[in-house]
Image 1 (tube, rainbow, N blue to C red):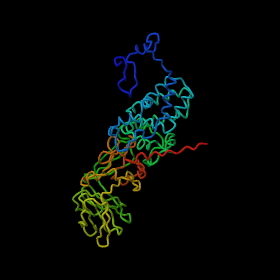
Image 2 (image 1 turned 45 degrees about the vertical axis):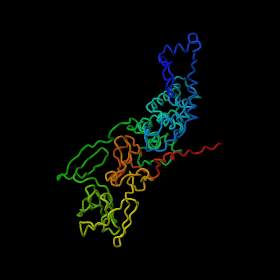
Image 3 (image 1 turned 90 degrees about the vertical axis):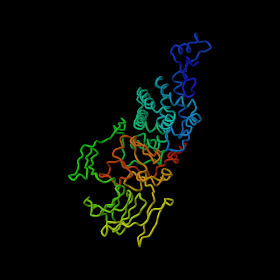
Image 4 (image 1 turned 180 degrees about the vertical axis):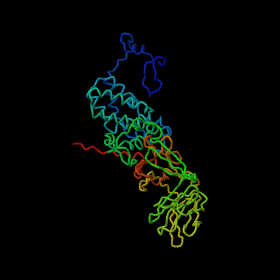
Length: 469
């Protein structure tokens, strides 16, 4: 039958006549005889498909173990789909809205639509469509549903449909790329005062916290615009050519060092009057925190980037750690040459404790503090699974093992998908190296302290049991 019917060799595709004349033949009993096919009413098909979605959709339907993988990287995904998304559910996910739009307004159908868009079933449908490779059709499905609802202006359901469209428009690339990130990423960035967020968040927890995030949908989120959200309007060199100043529409002025590499670590003195910084150029510097200028101390001795600095509680001594596997003690007012305390061992232990006179030095060996916020307690928990197996000799990776990439994905050192950031929130951005941005509030800050990820991602869904009355 392949010359006249399409889809007969693919169990996941509907069977369709390849030519309208054959359709007419099959539906005309006088012509087709034993081959006659009675067409079901669109209403019956709409009801049937929506009921299947209501009854059969579920969270993590294919049992995906890790949120670090894209759909394409999941082992035997076609087999999982075949086992967990049977043909009738696959068909319903992909074609329910086509049957709905061919049907006149009906209260029974309205309730079934509300069951879908007015609960977490909306997310479960998007998850299934991600796995089926059909995310590109989901916005059109809800837009079609919106037109169908406009006939009677069903306000509450219509509003949920509109917010579902906005969710898809702002996060479709993440949803299509990795089904778990529908929840881990896209859901986390829904503006918190929207009806959709308030409805869904009762059943979801342990997601990234967005500090200072939008409360309502912004125009850039709706349009999914690519590129920077704010332009750099002016740049200039200092007279000595050692610094660059930039002014941006993000309402910040930033001063950049044109000679030295990036600052990897900073710390305040106990009295708050000085700042010590460690840089990629292998130096340690002390700054006047009140005047914002560099002090007299310029400490050298490390042979690699300085990625950790700290004042001793007495405020006179500075401890620095670098990627050259050395700890150094400096006393800036006495000497610009630090003393080597010890070489860091091979990393088999997480903590090194040593004594230097009465000074106790505690150096955390490559403990990966993954934080995109000025608040240390916002750091990612259980980061070991993300950086497991990373070689400590890879200095550049250790300096920033988790970072935001141009496509919006925050990835681990081996390309693990930790989080996806919507376009409108990518710039300006807190990196792991950023300690503070002035003024605070111009950058989105993430609280990852309660976030489940990797092999624990599925714990984000904690449905509240409904009590029968």
